[in-house]
Image (cartoon, rainbow, N blue to C red; front, side):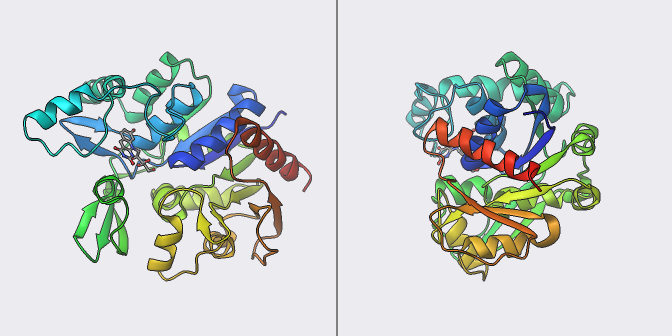
Length: 309
Ligand code: FO1
């Protein structure tokens, strides 16, 4: 299939779709723009969980049970930290640590996150372009009933997304801009796909980079989103719980309404009831990507559907 595709993603669901697209498209035709609002510092290291998840998924290193981290990784360093009394709640694997150590070193030497990511992906044998949403450091801050404002990984990993979310905000947007690489990829795209990632936690940070919404809005190409909500539930993670806490109903239809005229097509799961979405084009496919075959068929179905418009 020959069309230049940009996909916006964050987290495990987005990485699965990116893998499906990577198996269907020539590598030079796929650009993955990744949320970095989850990024954090741990033990002096810069961790970019969503970039890591995409890199490990596309290089087939990923721990398939978790959907993040490296398969077969060990946790000796984290165990040794616990011996010193550290409350080491973030599961950094020993091999995974190499990614963070080198990323940190190269960032500190003056490379941009885009350059560092390009270097890491090439060394992992990935030929698709993986781009952070911006080179600036932007952090998702979660205001919770129980703990007040906490950073994203504290909410997600430490408290296992159980706190009640009052609101979300992004720190650092004032210094953020669309990178030349993201701008070029979007301007050259024949289609834009918003992955089945959390609209609030993964996609919103990308769209909030100053200039991003307008740039996407100005593109005269098909734009589609895939629902992360099936049967009113999230396939993985806090999307459904969060939707209710933020005052939405937890349904694919509410996701479609939330994206509004950002997109002109919406894909939801084949098992869901028929729905009314505000978009011009709406269709159902199997979206729960349990196997590589389903990842590929979803990617192929979405691309063929777009081409039929
Ligand atoms: N997710 C967890 O649920 N627990 C962890 O201990 C954890 C460690 C971790 C380390 C490196 C990395 O790149 C990702 C990691 N993740 C972990 C996943 C990550 O926190 C989330 O999946 C995303 O931030 C949500 O998109």
